[in-house]
Structures are given as C-alpha cells and as structure tokens.
Length: 222
Image 1 (cartoon, helix red, strand yellow):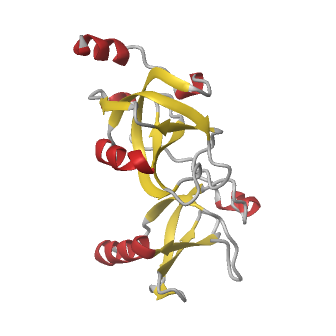
Image 2 (tube, one colour):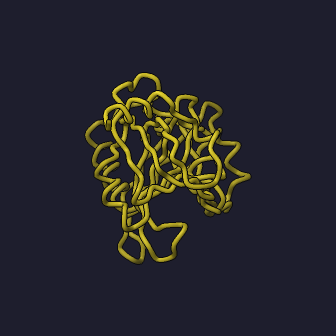
Image 3 (tube, rainbow, N blue to C red):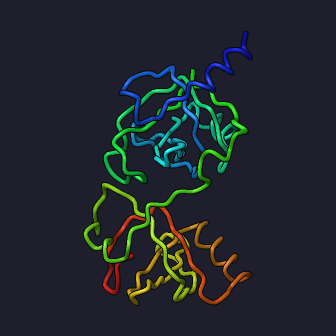
C-alpha cells in the first residue's frame, strides 16, 4: 500500500503557485538550489533552516523549517537534488530580506514528508534573477528584498577585521559598461572565498553572488 501511495503521489504533483494559504496534503516536485541556517522570521530569537526550492516552471519558493525540525530537514534535503514534498503549510513570506520574489513561503513541520526524486532532468539545476548594476541603486537600504548579481572580478582586497573581530573581504565586480560595485563578504564566506580565489585565481573570472543586501558606503554601493 505504501508503494502504491507513493506512486500515485508522484504522478499528481502540484505547482506551489496553484496552492492556497493553508495546510497542504498535495505533493510538489522541487529541486533544492540553496540552503542555509539563520534566524527565523516567524519566531523571534529562534533559529531556522531555509531552503530555496525550484519547480518545473522555473519558479522559486522559499521554504523554512523551525528550530525543532531544522536538524531533520538539513539532514534530509541536500542542495542540488530533487525531492517530492507533501504535508506542508503555505504561509506568508518574510516581510523583509526576502531572497525570492514571492509573497508566500513553505513551512516544513513535523508531519511534512520528503523523499528523493530520480527524474532530475525536468528541473533546472540553478536559477538566478540577476539584477543589472544600474538596477541596484533604487534598492539601497531597502530591507524588503535580497538581490542576485553577476560581474567580472575587478579586484579582490585583503581580509580585514571589524571591531568585533569578524573577518571582512571586499570584492569589486565590473559590468560590460564599466560600472563597478563592491561586494562585502563576512566571516566564513570571506575566508572561504579568499582561500579558493588564491588557489584558482585567473583573469576575467565571472562571479555570481546571490542573496545580497544592497547598502551604500562613502565610496560605492555594496
């Protein structure tokens, strides 16, 4: 009976865009294209795991697992792989710093089930909504969205430390019109990029950076 239920579920998948705000027993088929952990936007002072899911129509959806379930889903869901997911809840998305352009998010809870899908060719491996450099300026100090950008690496600075001892690395990107922006990486991401770039340093490297919060300093937006 379990095998027959799984078979029926996997042939009747729904798109997230077709679902309403409530508990869902429908099944979706998605690829995990990014994952990270951070603070929950639904519960103050509580950690959560975040996932960006991509469906067969190239639509991105933010999913999250609260503190009690984040360990399970970080172990079950792996970046780059395709899954069937059922028994979840559609909730309102983050009011600010939203990494996808969508008002809804998926809440993964205790009853949620996820299992691998081996038909991985039907969903793209990555999807970026790249913002041209001139389009960044209107979003400076805008806390409602996070941006994806791409450019040729123009300069990589040296790692510095702020007053709290956290590492910071500045990377300048240039576009085809000669516009330069500065990307600031912090903590582990700064040291990881500095190490990898030192090993694989080449000319005319195109860098894609996702989930950026646009800010403005004295010199340039970053």
